[in-house]
Length: 365
Image (cartoon, rainbow, N blue to C red; front, side, top):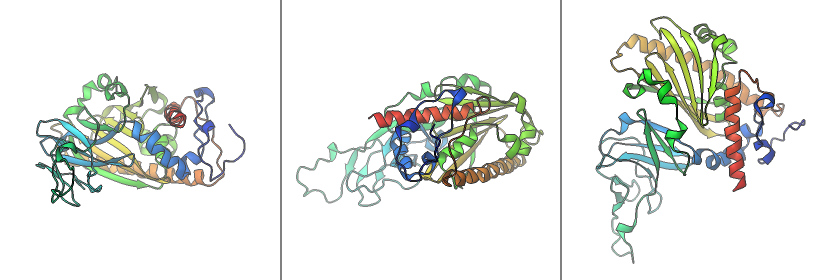
């Protein structure tokens, strides 16, 4: 690692992407959290080449049900076809780039561009184009919206822009570990979003270690057993878990499971409750974190859900405060990448190595 302070205006240095053994690893260098060039590179290197969580299957149950998303800068429309097939289409009209949809919806019969009215079938084929009869060699049947990969797991819908590892391989082992929870039977309750003044990776770093829990989350720390807090690594995800002891009015006793799925999806599984987190980059120094709450079928305790939301909100604001402080430190020009704790920050190192590999593959193209 270089000893000098990094410049605030460097482009990506290939040495930042070199693999580092866990026992001697440093954190990622500061410019990767602050530079506009790094942020734009990630769209192709990371987000266009990975699976992205976009919705729960409840939102796409019937023909014409659809949601919109933006992955790696590409607007997408995920829709259930008349044939029952789920498709992820580019939400960009083939005429002059207008949107087919601007928000989620139910039961659409067709996809009509908001700009000039070109209309597509639910499988993305152009059906009609107003007043185009005078256009020479214009063939409606030859035009269709591009499609990307889409897959469903445990009721969660993922999409991927480019050819990548099959989702079943990415998530291999999670089904067996979570079998007792039957996540596919959980019902969606609500979404809460937070906009955070930090780079998306700073938020992910914070999620991936319990090292900070005794210092930042006093109430959560009392529920978890820090001495037994363990991180397990797989190829494309990591799992932090700990015994959980909480009041019956909240979660009761059991185990807390915190899954991170490369590059920006989290599954927080507590007794009777699933919370999915998606970290969405907005700018080099700002991200949005979307929390979707799901509860076991038949769990209708409104008071318990309200307590869960209040406790989760408190923990998130504690995380937001420290992440925003960290972002200011990363941008200060003072920080040189520090050593990682080989025991407590294995999840951080795992994430950084996946990120470094993505950069190496991108730079090699």
